[in-house]
Length: 435
Image (cartoon, rainbow, N blue to C red; front, side):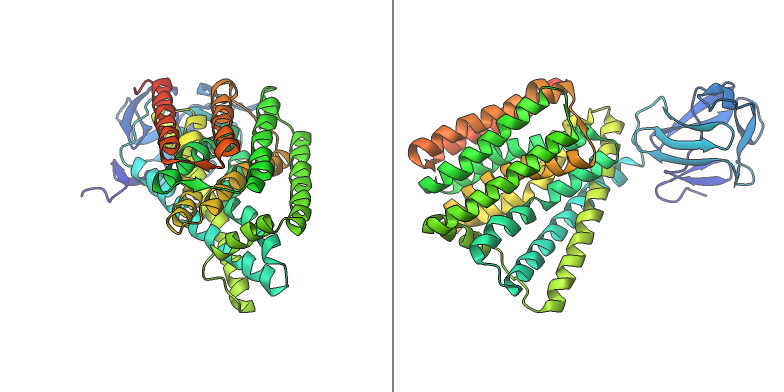
C-alpha cells in the first residue's frame, strides 16, 4: 500500500507531515530522513519507538528516563506527548508532563513533502489578506460616508489606514509570534519596495506629477518619519514608548493635514480623488457591516497564514527571517499599493499615485511600527539595523529631491528607481550567497 499524499509510511503507520516525534540526539536511534524532519527508529528490531528524556533539555526535577512515545506497530501515541513540526525540521512545543517543554532542530533541512504546503500557506495568506484588506477598506469608506464624514477626511484617514491594514496585521502577528525580524523586515522592505519598485513602475507607465502641497506636506513627513525610524533603530530595539511617540506624531500629522485641507483646496481635492479611486463602495448598512466583518476576518486569517508559511520557508532553507520579511512578505503586502498605483497611473491620476506611496510609507512607520511596538517591543537584527534601514533612508533621499525640484518623476528617473530595486534584490542574494 502506497502512502497517501503528504503522508509518509513507517511500519504500519501513515504519518502526516505534521506529526513526527523525537530529536536525533536521542541515543540508540538512527535517523530516517523524510518530510523535512528526522524520523527516528530503534537500532534494534523492536517495533516500539522510544525516547529518553535525559537526551534533551527537560524541566528541573525530571526523573523519568525512558518513555514510549509511539508504538509503530499499533499506531498508538503515548498520551503524555504532544508534538508539532514546522517545515524545516523545527519541533515546536514538544512537551511531556515530567520532561517539560523544549524546542530543538532536526539535523536535516529537507523540504520533501511539506514545502509545497508552506508555499500554499504563503499564497493563500496573500490572497486572503489582499481580499480582506480590500473588503475592509470599502466597508470603512462606506461607513464613513454613511455617517457623514467628508470625502477629504475619508481620503486622509480611512483610505490611509485601510491601504496599510495588511502590513499592520502581518507585523502585529509576526511580533506576537516572537518573529521580530519578520515584522521589522516587512515594514522596511515595504517602504523600499514602495519607493523604488512601485514609484518606478508607475513612473515608467507615465510621468508622475504632483502638486507643491504634496511635496511640502506628504513627502517631507514621509522622509522625516524614515529618519526617525533610522535613529530609533540605531539603538537595536523599538520600545513601547518609541511606539507611543510614533502614534502621537501620526495623530499630529493628521490633525495638521485636516486644517491644511480646510485652507488648501488642492490638498482637499487630492484626498477626495483618493476616495474616488475606491470602487464599489457599499451603501446598504448590512452590506457595509458584512464587508467590515469579512474583511477583518480575512486580514487576521490571511496574516496568520502568511506569517506561518513565511516562517516555515525561512527555517526550511536556513534563510534569516529578516530576509523573508524584506522580500517575500514585503512584496506580498505591497501588492495593493502596486495595483492602486498602476491603476492611478493608467487613469492619469499621477498625483494620487504619488500620494498613495508617500502615505503608505508614512503609515508603515508611524502607524504600523508604532502600534506594534506598543503591543510588543521589537528587536532589530544587526543586518537590518546596519544595512537595510540605510537603504530605505537612501531611497527616500533620492526621491525627495526629484519631487522638490520638478514636482514629478520622469520615465528616465523611474527607470533608475527600478534599477535600484533590482540592484538591492541582487545585494540580498549576495548576502545569502546565492549571487
